Length: 207
Image (cartoon, rainbow, N blue to C red; front, side, top):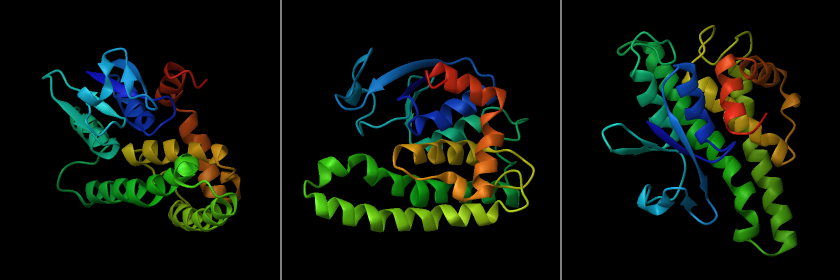
């Protein structure tokens, strides 16, 4: 399998899952600004123009971080990265994946595209203030649920933790101090020390 990625982007979550499962995989970096990669026009690989994109051994391409992470975890039925089918824990994990995708990941997005969206400085500042409050509220919910727990599902590390770790790592780029939420800061530190996470970060040139 080959993962098309951008260093530190949401594709890092899928990369971490592959490393956790000790899969055989290739990586190919994507220039998202120009939509190019070593393979050529990235739009020909993923018409959405976004990462991650997973080129499977069958030749099919799978997209969307949350879905790719689920697919990867399901390749190893012995893995605990995604609880077993039919259990409530599996749906709790998927519930978290949806929340992270739609309420946390999505609300980081505008901070990285604001210069293209808006030219007026006053308007930008107003937008940043309101967007930051919304993002903080979404992050605070995750912090509350982590109280007394090592991971989002309690003691078990899952694909949801890899996704949350990836998103929260963007805080430093937008002036958001995750340290104001001790539960989240502890989670970030805990996840950052996992061998598979360290491997993925090194492979992306982030360490």
